Length: 394
Ligand code: DP6
Image 1 (cartoon, helix red, strand yellow):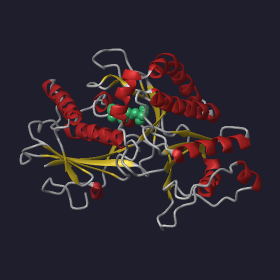
Image 2 (tube, rainbow, N blue to C red):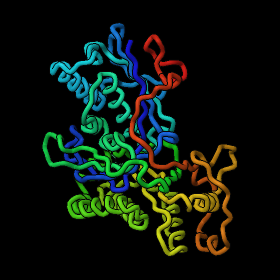
Image 3 (cartoon, rainbow, N blue to C red):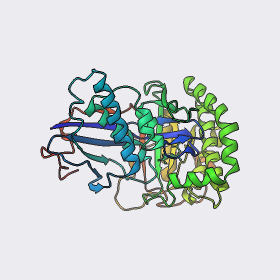
């Protein structure tokens, strides 16, 4: 039996994808740009086994068997196997693609709640495609295949700062992810995820975007007239590590994305009251300092992703605790990278005063930029047993 285990990261868009021009190939109406988060805090782990004794393709997600016939899953399997066959027929086989006629068992787990608006499908499909490629010994451009699982998954194929070029071709061959800067480029950048709700999303982003493409004139205007210039400005601000510009663009892009959701007919509401309170809090905090010290982004759900530089983290975590006092349920409120207590000045407390909303934020994950997918050498991460079936802990 051949078995491979890999891990892949979550990415957070700072220039957001607004919709698709081709649903089947998953081709976007605009380019987008994201920050890859560190796998120490958020990751998907996938193990795939293949052998003569495995007679049908099967998949288990977060402990439950799932439908292997899902069209997007089938696209990824088909495309990787096609590349592996091509490699074999070109004679560059090193033995890894020999087992192509065998079926696979796929087992995948997230170390964070699925479908809570934390881009789990991006990490999931990136991990699936990367692990399949390792299993079959396929190299080369894999983001095009990950894109066919979930659009944003193509951006999780790289670490650091990543752009997904929309491309122009009908066949999608030029709709690819590219690294803009590596994860080591901006070491002071930190990311706080304020989990406002662990409920499942009400409107999935796939269905929501389809309605937006059909009905929102603002979405079309944004894709044609706003995003191209913003992509350039965003790349420039990342290259220069200019937080003021990076933060402003991030917030404006998130706000415009949600404006297109409201412009969709019938409208889509991803932000809830807690999301709006977080937006106000960030603006009050920045106004107090007269500069952009914290920036927010929201995608298809109410959770806030905040960007800030390392020296701001301790104080802003206190600000969050002050405005959203943790529910006294004994669960850890702060997860991820360590923080130290920081006293809030009277002036700051007055400046950020709004309605305190106890329990509005369930918990905060503190993380940073991180690397792309990688094969695991740690046998304890292997999710499949010697029989090719999920271990009881998977
Ligand atoms: C709002 O990549 O989730 O998060 O291909 O339908 O799975 P599917 O779409 P998906 O769209 C992401 C939309 C977004 C913005 C973004 O991440 O760019």
